[in-house]
Every structure is written in structure tokens, then in C-alpha cells.
Length: 312
Picture 1: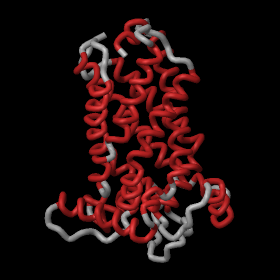
Picture 2 (picture 1 turned 45 degrees about the vertical axis):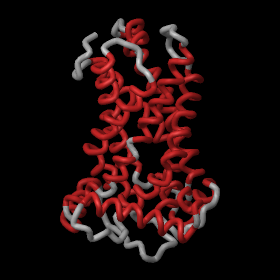
Picture 3 (picture 1 turned 180 degrees about the horizontal axis):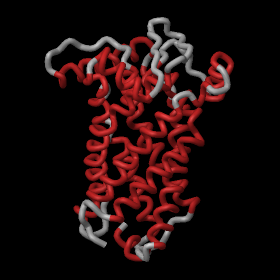
Picture 4 (picture 1 turned 90 degrees about the vertical axis):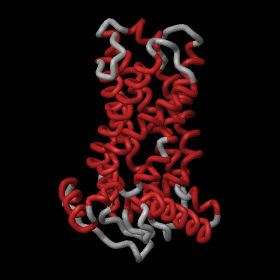
């Protein structure tokens, strides 16, 4: 197998990761709806996830928990394809057949995350707007939006807010590349420990458990920034007027964090964490399960299974 950036092996990883993530998100999508409402709607009281979902269904109908499913699935598919492709391409090019280490996995994960953020942020901005459109907020200051679909959302955002608005929250997203980087570092490290030097396929239970552990750790560490990222993507906040984009981003993040703490205390930074952990841990665990099974089946069909496992 060639270790070049353009390889069938990287493509298999990318397709497997994209299919796995889309399948998992479709199953657990209502949990993500509950998490996003708690992050963005400051006046909504933090309650258990089932209670929040029950309130949403009562106020907005049975379809409300699945509002914005299609744009989220499209964004997630593109995002995971880019991330898995970059991660495994860079890993193959860097290691040249040698076994990886946690520090190498972390650095490669950060590099893959930066590429992913710069390419796919506009999709996530649009899907955040579409997902919250029509929601009944407790916060009266939130302005309603009216987008007819993904393309219309792109057009309206560019026309009304400028093309730069499609990259709202990019700075926090760049900081949050630590989330998937930590996740992949823990996942790959646990996978190496389970194999103990023996090239073998992970069982479904093993892939599910280590995927859940890796995502839980990464989410808890980075959750306050994820909350700020959701607020920035939604686009309804007072921006800093600094001429420097970097200073403006830093000041905006600082102001949002400080205001959150002043209003709700330190726990306000973790509002919606229960819903996020429930959704993201289950989604990541199921994604890694599907990813491992799809990838291993594809590599076996290509006659590459033994050499493939040795390099991982």
C-alpha cells in the first residue's frame, strides 16, 4: 500500500468514518437538539434531557426534535470525510509504516482538525441556523430567521451579513480542534493497548466502549468552548469592534465566557453538558463501531487486512 496522501487506504477510512457518523447521528439526533437549545437559549432552565425534549415536542410538535436533520447530516458527512481522510493520510505520510504514539496521534489530529475547520465551518454555520429556525425560545432578544433551505441560508447570510459570517466561530472552532485530537489520541491509544502488539480486528463491544470513553474525556475538557462556538454560529451576539480580527475574536470569546459566568456561575459554562455527553458519547461510540466494521470489511475485500492492522 502506498503511503502517499492520495491513497485508497485513506479513502476507505474517510468513507467508513463518514458513513459511521451519519448513521450514528441519525439515531441520536434528538439529543443534539436538546443540547443546542440549552446552549443557545440562555433563559431556558437546565433540566434533564428527556424533560427538555418533552417540552420541545409539546410546544413545537413531534417533528421539532428532528428539525434541521438534513443539513446536519450533510455537514457531518463532509466534515468527517475530510477529518478521517486528513488524519489517516497525514498519519501514513508521517509514520511511514512505524507504530504511532499518543503525541503523534495528538499532533496529527490537530493538523487534520485545522484543515477540517477551514473547509467545513460554513456548512456548520448554516446548519446551526436551520436547526434553530422556528424554535420557541425563552429569550425574547433572539430574532427569528426565515430560510427555505441550505442554499437560501447561504444566500441570505452572505447578502445580509457578509461572506465572513459563514466563518462565524472559526476561532473557537480552531481552538476546539483539540476535541477530536484528544478523542483520536485516546481512541488510538486504547486500541493499541487492547491489541497488545497483535494485529487483530476490534470486537463491536471494544470499539463501542473505547469510542465512548475517548469522546467523553474530550467533551468534558472542551465543553465551555463548544457552548461559545454554538452562540457564535447562531450569529445573535454583540461583536467586538476591534480592527484586528484576532483581537476581536479573543475579546468576543472572553466577553461571552465572562457574561455566562456572571449570570449563571461557573456551572453556566457547562449548561447542557448532560445532553451533550449523552448525545455525543453515544453517537461517537456508535460511529467508531460502524467505522471499524466498515473499514475492516473493506480492507479484507481488498486483501489488505493483515498489513493494515500492523500499521495501526
